[in-house]
Image (cartoon, rainbow, N blue to C red):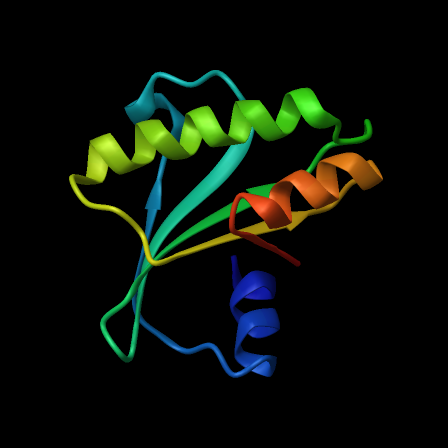
Length: 106
């Protein structure tokens, strides 16, 4: 988490509050780290951190959208920004799909 916070701080993103949500709370079996963050302006951020060896494909984009929908229901509000940290190769079509659905890729 510290590496992620340092990376965001270098880009000028500072958060007042950052809460980790475990996948078990959302009944998800994926190995993913999810954070609900509030920036200094009061906007809510959904931050996902994915670390895997295989390439992220289009099916994974749909999977993350489903996880995001569960997160919105769990938290009870919509998020202003969606950010995903990917530590794996990314398919070009999946990258475009993430961007068209409003994700910011790090």
